[in-house]
Length: 116
Image 1 (cartoon, rainbow, N blue to C red):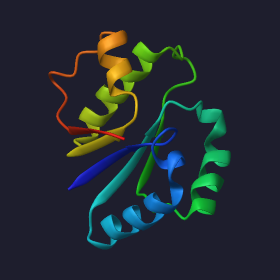
Image 2 (cartoon, rainbow, N blue to C red; image 1 turned 180 degrees about the vertical axis):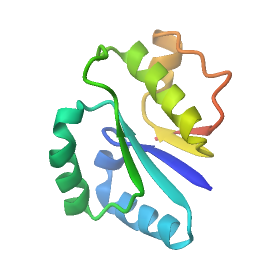
Image 3 (tube, rainbow, N blue to C red; image 1 turned 90 degrees about the vertical axis):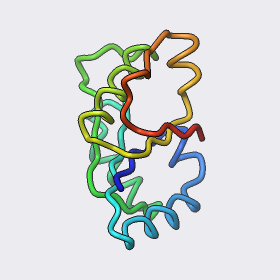
Image 4 (cartoon, rainbow, N blue to C red; image 1 turned 30 degrees about the vertical axis):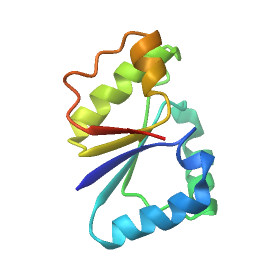
């Protein structure tokens, strides 16, 4: 299985739990992608933060700094990124905002979405 985790609002909301959870997933040979709308200029800061928390992951994906930082764009980018990664499960805290407030269409989302 492959997993996609949002960073802010998911991993950052309970790093102790996600330290344990990502370790267990990775130990059982499951792939972990972290998908964040953070500016890629923050890559080193983000890697240090994840290391400090002890988060296990395989790849880290940042939304382009050229893209607007509104929720609609973030939701569409994350949906498309998760689809391109062929993730089985996607954990995020903003699905309701993306879908109900911003109108992001998740009908073609390939991952099972879990709201944290």
